[in-house]
Image (cartoon, rainbow, N blue to C red):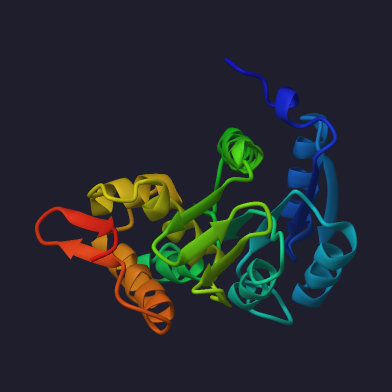
Length: 230
């Protein structure tokens, strides 16, 4: 089995939790795995750490004393070059999971969690982030620059959340093909949270793209979605 240490050399993580026991456990374990770990106990402190330290990944508890973790997640994910976010929470409702994933979280773990699972999720998120290259994708008059994380349509900037960006990128990589909702869930979130999540984010993405031109994301009834002109 591939040891976590291989992925921990020089990468900086931010652990945000107001429970000292959990913070200390995660910081110690991740430190032993080779990661550089900073911690924060409040949402405001977390936002300051992200701005100053530019961590490679944020492990974020939803229940914080001063600010909802979802709000922290939203603010972090809207920043340029936002780091991946792994949410931790005692809440296990589907609604909470959908909320976190649609506002920019990359993954989700419910307390109580196992340390091996945390390490595995961290490793996957960091590996996925490193695999990103800097191609420029285009479909019609929509251009996605993966280096600057900018999306334009007919030369005008289109503001997208990280989740909407990942969805658009996946559709553009597969332009002209039909992708199913299950494929979108697997490649954009790597979780099966139901078709409702996909439909909601696709709808939001369409509203933003279609405001500047003709529809490019088409529903293929009974199969999924296809991004193409016409």
